[in-house]
Amino acid sequence: MAQDNKAGSIRSYCPVNLQDARRIVDEFVVHYNTKRLHSAIGYIAPQDKLLGRKKEIFLERDRKLSEARQRRAAKRKIV
Image 1 (spheres, rainbow, N blue to C red):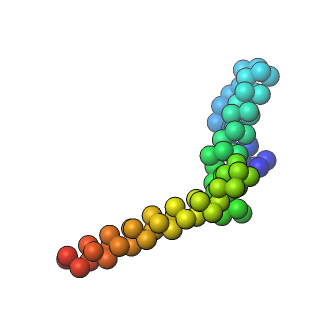
Image 2: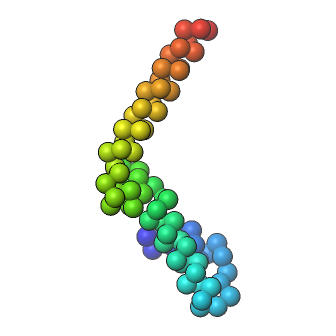
Image 3: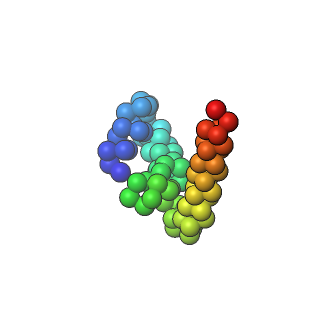
């Protein structure tokens, strides 16, 4: 997280004071834990893993991949 913190938060912005720096870091931590996908836990956000959404997310991914495969196969048959 330290590398992500430097590259994705502090270096992208120039805090004007300590309060501004804390706000920037707080926003980054929220993003890091709720939006950013982590490869070590299956490309889901840590919050999703903690809330037990991993299985649901994986099922949705599988459904979307299956639909995409079917669309590609149908497209190949047309051409």
